Image 1 (tube, rainbow, N blue to C red):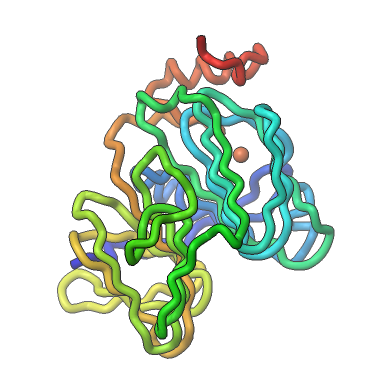
Image 2: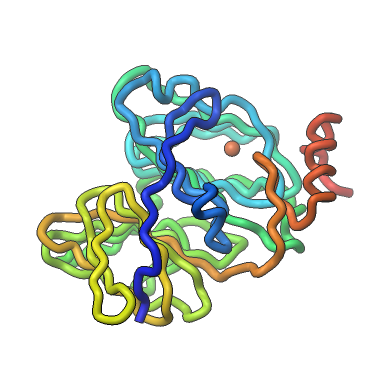
Length: 282
Ligand code: FE2
């Protein structure tokens, strides 16, 4: 049985050119949950809190995943790819050997609400060629039952394959439950995982006989092995469920670069300075 080991509220901070976010992973409190390096929630109705967006910046050594719940964001990158993310769409970007991209709001008012997740790559894939999957909302499979629905962004649920191809073995589900219903899933014993509640609250077993309630805008980090049961108690609830096979390698991180060693980080920063970050390795 899986249980909740720790509940984390996240840290209000600012990223990009001044976008207000709630950082849940990639903080002093939770550096990473292998293979996940970062989770940010941007959720704001005030344009002043998001309008500056995320102008061009580099990445190397991992994948960035943007999931938009509400709003419109334009992506452009150094491989020449571009796309418009809108409600329910996913963008799975493999930075690999090096990419420079921007994500800018394409709205000047109203709610901007979404998530950015960073998924690490193992040493032998950190310098893979950059790639980009632009997945519109209608291409994300949904499993609908009397208990609610599950959007399968990546991995597999109820024998339905997720929308994104992933280099690291991960599951990314957006789960909606009606009041008084449960969600259950069997996760591989050696996978790490967490639940991030974005609407309502849920209850999950704690250690021993306890029940842990995870409130809106909080993350429950999973311990234990085997089946996970998440209950929407007295109101409808929505949460992200992320799980993945740990990579188990040293992590060296510095801003937008995540490698295995400090030397590789310095090389990335140096390549960026010289303008060769996005050159394809020969
Ligand atoms: Fe980025």
